[in-house]
Length: 142
Image: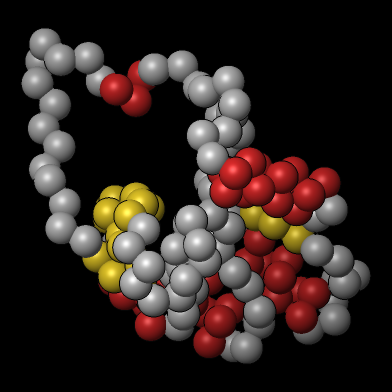
């Protein structure tokens, strides 16, 4: 996994994780990367400062979760996640197989979510099967 600081043409800056540098390039070239704040599709990598963890410094990621969303956009993302998860079947690691089966008519049509390796997702897209990455991981941490 690789983390990039991204910037949209509106000047918003945000961080996002990608499977690899090539994964970012593929998603960006297909228009699947957009600003987390305003939704603008013109996004590019921003200059990043290195993050070096020293032995004595506490890791900032170990702080507790925030009690409420930091912005209206974060609240909307949380609401979207709840709506998608409530109206979709989570097929987990069987996502690629199940999406293909639905597309080919071998499984009942329904909304599904799950996890797929980069190669599996690329194969689905190459075969014309509509899939989209969700802007959160499959783990519930909030």
